[in-house]
Each structure stands twice: as structure tokens, then as C-alpha cells.
Length: 216
Image (tube, rainbow, N blue to C red; front, top):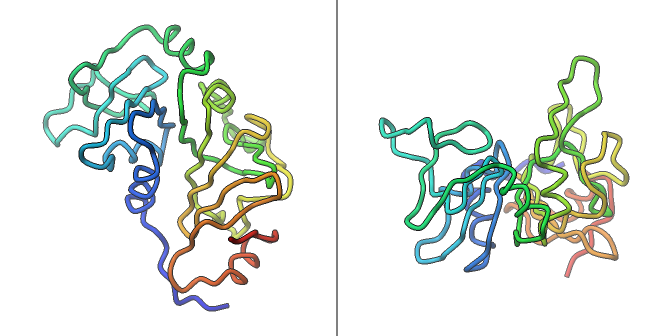
């Protein structure tokens, strides 16, 4: 297999996701890689970021030395609050999530099936500590669920699968998958390739994923 390609860095991937978020969208960023998206919202675009621990109007990460650890996101990372932003009880936050008031949530994942099923809270392995947090509420409550993840596990297995083998977070909820090698859309006809890193062919991607990939 040709290896003449460079993976997207975590920041490059976050920038790609941020560019696809439409102006005026209400968005929740999950713990881990998705939090980086806040740092790459295009200038002049209004995106209202919500955090499940009770923040609306969250800004990018604070500059070094200006962190306020009374103002953190759901991953316990210090954040900033944009003008007009607010913080509130997490019960109100979950009401927003469950009530269908979020346009997009961006989550990490262990597996995504070809039908858009999401598994992101437990691998089910001995010693693993399950921690679902608000992922189930977000995956089903948001109008769209996007996933950010590496395409392959450390063992080289695809995280996009025909059927999830890990405990499920939500059924048929994922619409887009952003990975370090390619971006995909989940459609009624199957997984569609949206874009790939330079130097990685459609056939090579199909071999990595192990599934047929639709292409425009």
C-alpha cells in the first residue's frame, strides 16, 4: 500500500470541523479532541458553544497564565466566556440537550457503524471504566451528531465498522465522521467518502476501512 500521505494533525482536523459549522449554530463539543474545535471557529462567524456542565457562549482556551479554574468545560479544562455568555445548573444544560435545542454535537468515538450507530462510552473490556456522561443525551438530542476520531486503532483496525461491537451510545445518529485520514458522511445508501488526505486513494481507503465507500 502506498504510504505517501500525511495524516491530519489534531488541530488541522479541528479546523476542518470548525469550517463546516454554519453561522448561528448552537454546538456542543465533547470531551477530548472535539474541544479543540473552539480554537478554530472562523473569524466573523457566530457559533454558540454549549458545554454540558452548564455553559452557553463558551470561547476558546484561555492564554497561558490567565486560566480561571472556576470556569471549566465538561472535560475540566479551563475555558473562556464570550460577551453575552452564561453559566447555569447542569440540569438546565441537559434540558437544552434533551429538548432538541442543539444544532450539532461533536463527539469522539471508539466505533461508528455504517448505519451511523455510535459507540463512544465503553470498550467493554476488563478494567475499563465506563463513563457515559452526557453522550447519550447529546447523540440523540442534537439535530446532527458529528464524530472526530482517528480512523484506525493502535492495532490498525478501522473504527468505522459494519456493526459496532462495543456498547452503543446511540442508534443511527451519526451524520459525519472526521478522521485523521479522511472525512465521511453516513447516508441511507452507506458510507460516502467526502474528502481524503493527499496521496491516499479511494481504493486504499476502502482497504483500510474494510467497507465499500460511496463517492460522488
